Length: 142
Image (cartoon, rainbow, N blue to C red; front, side, top):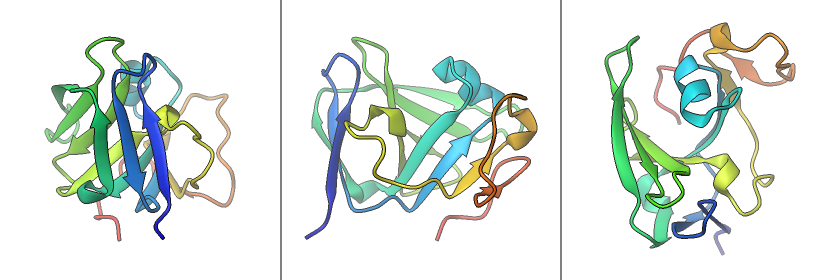
């Protein structure tokens, strides 16, 4: 049986289920993630799109183009409370990334890499056993 995990937005209007483990767990320290989430970094769990099932609600979407690469990132968020639930990226067709803080239990998966560490806030400490990249990770995930 494949493990399933549930999650959703703050107000509960948007709910989803993921099947299996993420292809990769990432912490992103880029300035865009810091600003879009009003936080120090983004914690992200990336899945093949068919492993993500929307159960409830109709998320709104907004597109952002990177000032570094020119590629798009489409964020899906709750139109009621504004919680960013997931995103897709031009660089990773067929993948959907879940904002890991929206899982009902955000502790069940592991972080494989930290990206955009050149923008990391000085008081954030990265564990020694995790891969780090000064900028983004451009190779497609396995």
